Length: 132
Figure 1 (cartoon, rainbow, N blue to C red):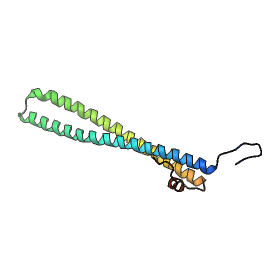
Figure 2: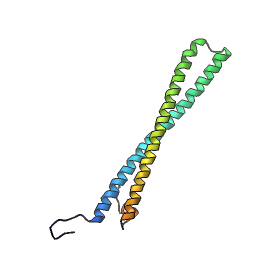
Figure 3: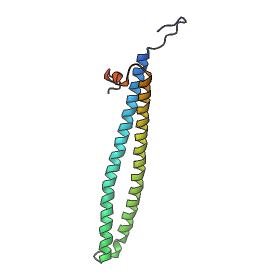
Figure 4: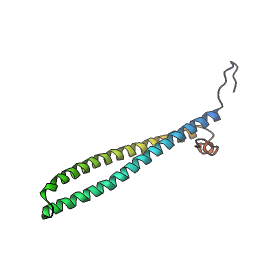
């Protein structure tokens, strides 16, 4: 598009395509980070359950007299590990929630973008924006 002053602006369809491609890349990054958080949280929860079970059996064995009192340091170490795991799991849950909120807000940008444009985000995505 040319104006009488010689200034040329970009085609609005090209701008939409660029915006959608950028938002798609950002969405993929949020999804990748969320998957990393979920994987770490899942692995930690498995180890947490194992440590909690081990601690429970050890305490029970000590109470029944089938384990020596010297193993109380193991109980202390397991207790500390369990507490650390609980804190980390809570932090990961907050991080996962933040990623979901960011991803949702990005969807709102896509929706807002599509509401203001004649070309929908879906049409631009079908044309190949954000592939890779």
